[in-house]
Length: 54
Image (cartoon, rainbow, N blue to C red; front, side, top):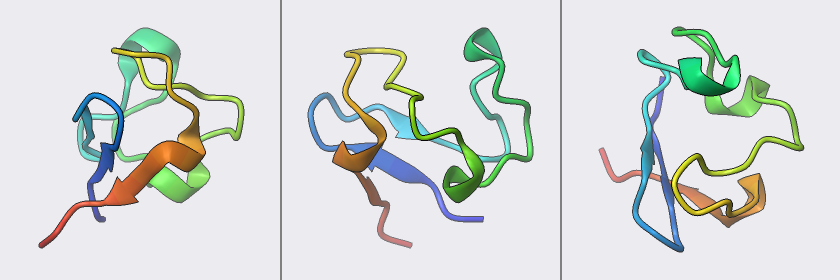
């Protein structure tokens, strides 16, 4: 599963960790996060994330 980076603040969403503070369990691929989820650091919308380089 690929990590995704917020293009606004640089927060990295790691699917192995998820976003437990916002009810996204570990093991959740970025594609499966609800569309209304926002970056937990800066509040950027999901469409402002890009796949991280491998």
